[in-house]
Amino acid sequence: MSSPHESLLQVENLEVLIPRPSANGKSIENLRAIDGISLSLRAGRTLGLVGESGSGKSLTALSIMGLLPPPAHITSGRVVLEGRDITALGDRQRAKLRGDRVGMVFQEPMTALNPVKSIGDQVSETLILHRGVRRKEAWDHAENMLARVGIPGTKARMRHYPHQLSGGMRQRVLIAMALICHPPLLIADEPTTALDVTVQAQILDLLMEMQEEMGMAIMFISHNLAVISEIADEVAVLYAGRVVEKGPAKALFKDPRHPYTQALLATIPKLAGRERAREARLLSIPGRVPVITQEERRCRFMERCPLAGPVCTFIDPELQEVGPNHKVACAKIDP
Ligand SMILES: Nc1ncnc2c1ncn2[C@@H]1O[C@H](COP(=O)(O)OP(=O)(O)O)[C@@H](O)[C@H]1O
Ligand code: SF4
Ligand SMILES: [Mg+2]
Image 1: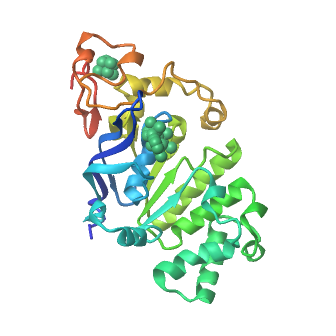
Image 2 (image 1 turned 90 degrees about the vertical axis):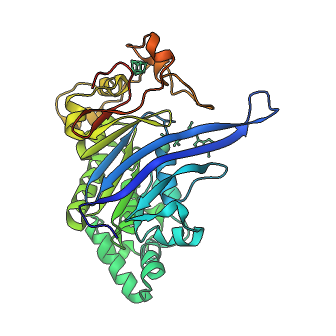
Image 3 (image 1 turned 60 degrees about the vertical axis):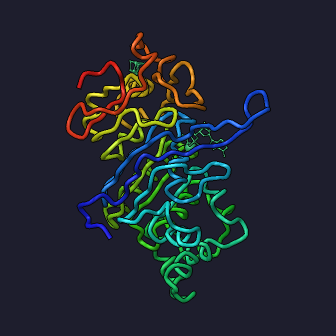
């Protein structure tokens, strides 16, 4: 086990390929969905993972949890959690980690909950499964946990079914389920995206409160840099399966160096106050994230980059340090 000062989670050079039929249907090509991503997260801290849809955020999270949907698979790299390479574990051992060492919250709580099981049964199940706690005791813990995540009328709610709850309440239930075993890591993949703005703000506040109370690290995934800016200590910006910029949130927001990070920041409407920024719709960057199927020696952001020049056509930029722990992958950046 690692000490609290060391990295709790390290993703090292992770590569995930997805085989699929080529355009002419005559052969198989590999979509390079995650192409050499490295990340690290210390105990009790929050890492924000940001990028447009299709940049590889969810597949990164699913790789960590051992839940990649076939035929997607890890072809190289490691995921080290609490000092253990979890990519080397078998399916059963990895399943044991989920809920116990890693809690998960997704965008759409309804699909993550079982529609025919009561809330009480679902929240207590994790404890019964991982801790061997007896049903009655697990039920009491679950009731307590629901109260802690701000669900009123807990006793009655325990006997309710998911469809009887609002979207925000269902997300609170998922957070209770994810945290009931006190995992050192919570992965939240777009947990507020499907909710309306007021509820979104409440769920963000709840995650921060729970972190203060329980001390878990959070990997918080969002396509919205405004949301990330509210919660993250560290930020990694993903583009087409690569990290293009990462660093302490303060440095990255004050001095974003990659043209993609700058473009993402420009999508946040400049309104007074954080609440207003959350309310406004994000603007979009013209163009879309390219699909990469082979090793390319050029910058993946080239087609959309306002600074692109000849050098960008033959260099696939590596991350380089531009400040303390602040790294950028752009051929035109001088360290
Ligand atoms: N089950 C799948 N089958 C085929 N391609 C997939 C699958 N899941 C994701 N992808 C592809 O992998 C890339 C990254 O996806 P994802 O990690 O879901 O992105 P994000 O969460 O950042 O929106 C995308 O190009 C997406 O189309
Ligand atoms: S390498 Fe070139 S194309 Fe890529 S982000 Fe930097 S300036 Fe833009
Ligand atoms: Mg996603």
